[in-house]
Image (cartoon, rainbow over all chains, first blue to last red; front, side):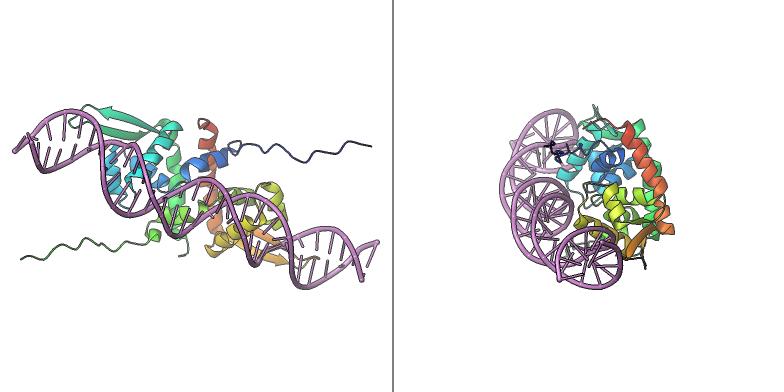
Length: 113
Length: 113
DNA sequence: CTTTGTAGTTTCCAAACGGTAACCAGGCGG
DNA sequence: CCGCCTGGTTACCGTTTGGAAACTACAAAG
């Protein structure tokens, strides 16, 4: 008797596809908004909170850490008093700007929900 | 005694911002993948299931309905036997392609998780 | 020594989301 | 008449997510 074909295919990790991988990062709540407000230059934690009023500090921290881990954003502590923290887009982060521009453009033309 | 400043500001709808509005549509699971596979032309329900193996029929239906509602995708029933259904990008949907291209490019350069 | 400002952290919780599995309808081929 | 194909729908359920509120650390100003 012939061997059965094993159907339990190893599920390839979701990070295999570049599209899925990148969406896993920028798909979270407020992520693209954060990148959008960093496009013009470095910005501090509390400035981002003012830029995006509905974001909670917890979520802002989470997003910034994720973006830093993936090399999209860099974090720099300035020895002011009190010490402040500047976030800015890395070179990789800059590459997302045209994509986000495109999303904004479509958002403007999109039917209301 | 002076009147207090009322702090309960009317929370403007999340759809006010074009970026947030568009992300609400393309942020769902597999949404960008669906658009990606429609970029080359019309595609049927079952073809999309083969293109994106891990997507469930429930989610694929949900995504296609959302995209249709927002004018990104159009749905056409062909009188074949059995009747088949073709989905394709609208003009608005086509405008998302460059944005998704950008996301893919960043995804390729992104650090592993 | 209390207040102010920056930059978070922690806990708790309800709602949203997506996965699984089963089921359905209409048409046709055998 | 039975199964099969396409294109879904439905019910159930566990996990994840993001929101709210309260709390922390540290430094300097007053």
